[in-house]
Image 1: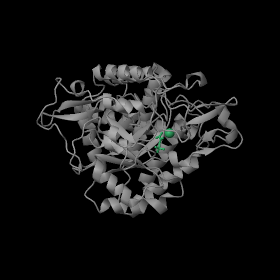
Image 2: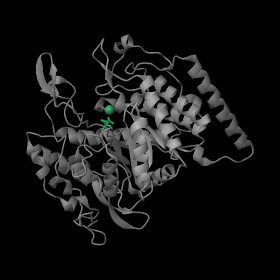
Image 3: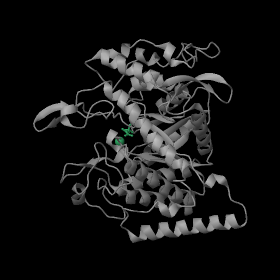
Image 4: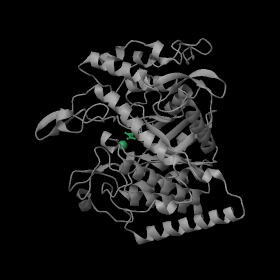
Length: 476
Ligand code: PEP
Ligand code: MN
């Protein structure tokens, strides 16, 4: 698109208005200097073409003037936790909506998302006997890659919905609107602010897990299992209090934010040269989220997204779909992790149930032969999306999801490797978007509460089902 020609505003992308000389030009594999705009010279897919260039310029200038949403200190902390995960000393839970909407920025929605992630954490901590790293798909998960750029609505061909930071879900708002870029920032900021305020007020206090009630869970088995788990944790905590062994870390937890780094104009505008508190040097941080990932459709080695991602300090993810070859995977790691930082890259495999045994072993083997130490994560959702014949709605079968998770756990184990985390599309609400699970939702049930504007999400109940099944696998 035309706006990729947006000029380099180096002045506003630095801390004090000028590029420091010390580590100014982080050199790339090709020896050329990287900066947040070097992706402009690479081929790009899923690009957005706006019809009002001046409005885009105004939006990007505004974004560049706004403060960072997250800090280098927090980003480094997540990097440290992901190093632990890559070494098998922590388990990662990443989850949230497929497409976040601006309207999801409300107290109830944010609380229910935090709650389901905390509930699942408890189950996974108990099952895996490992500390949990929580990363939400929240506070910026707006832009969506689409396989089809147009769709038919009431007999008319209109542009597809590409996420609230690009166009609107309502058919009358499908033209890309640059003012949505700025709206995305403020909705992210408000969401993040509420998350921070909840966490600092004891929302995630491990002494109060009963407060995270299972409001939408019907299954008595799941309710009882959860209650007994909470009871044993509570007893354990009161025992520790009695013997004076209580740790203040139980009063609060970390919850990190993440989104797909798809809309590079937005990411570029929030990429800042900031002081790394570990060595007091200025480095490029993406301050729009703690963690960003490259989608399966935008991971071309010579493309704009890989170019952008290779220069930022944040820990990053890359989706690994069935078309990824072992050679491509290694080449991608060489570009994205040239310094061999443990846990810098999270590989999020999403092959589809039934393909894991065939594809994962070669990927594990290829990475093992390198010096890269990655976080291996499984996204059992994206390779298992189907259209339900009766309603024409997109859905996922709980059985397929569990089958991909179980195969991934098993294949890693047999290869002498380890699955370090799970990436899910979920919501804390009682939606009916995926079939199966302990509620035994059927194809006919899909229309009861099908709320998603993009991919089908696991309900609160189905999400807990996944957590319990993973926990059970670790208990075996
Ligand atoms: C997603 O995570 O919503 C997504 C589009 O995934 P993928 O890139 O793996 O298809
Ligand atoms: Mn999705």
